[in-house]
Length: 110
Image (cartoon, rainbow, N blue to C red; front, top):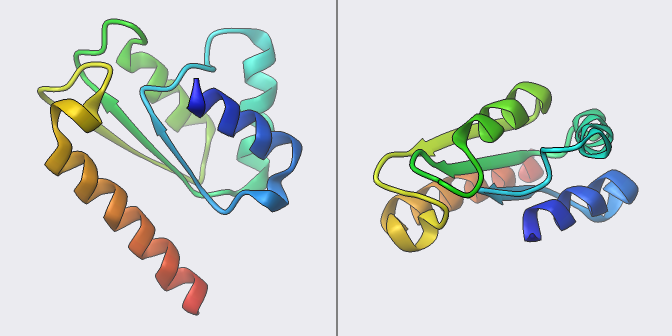
């Protein structure tokens, strides 16, 4: 539920959030979630969405939906991963997160 909580915080207090990493995240299934997603989109907070293609808890279509609604997002769908890519494909997951954080740091320097 961390991703859903992060999105809610960012929608309420965007100045407290520099970026968000969503991994197979809940929070994309009800009309109230759409409001949060719209708020997040308007905040322009950078969002990295990482999803396992074989997630049986929250389908990969949720990732595609989030990415389509959040213009400041990037999406990585991981082969060979289900609901916990950080365990199932840790090397790939960690590389994606580190690259995302490096890009953020570079932007802050400019």
